[in-house]
Length: 154
Image (cartoon, rainbow, N blue to C red; front, top):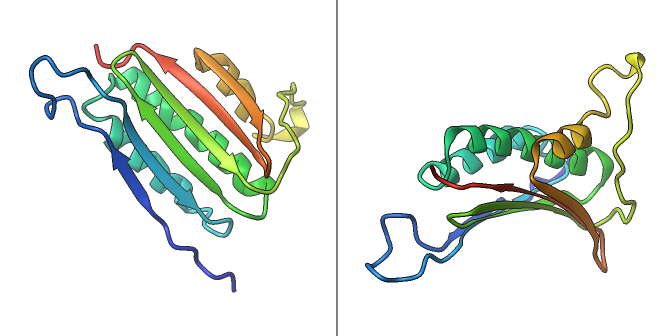
């Protein structure tokens, strides 16, 4: 049986009500490590992201962010053996979510799935369709796949 890795969520920054008058809005940050054997953690990441965005984002952006982070975390867990780290950074104008893996240097590329693929192969197509911006950055060890949603709280 695989050893469960310690999960940590760190939220930095101040919420919308935690700002003093005249103080510049600082980005808020959520960080979560997901172990390779924690496939059920995808739902937990979705819930944590929803809670993180509760006072920072509108419903449409939150729904899109949940869907996209699910796709990226699932891809990281399926295609690597070392888990992932999810980092979400929110400002009043933008949400950026990064999913870092530490094993695979293979850069993902969207493709058009055929009818026999079932639901396989649609994750990056969704990211490309719903995100305002997205990309992949190679790291010294692994890679980071990220997306941005613009607009913030209405």
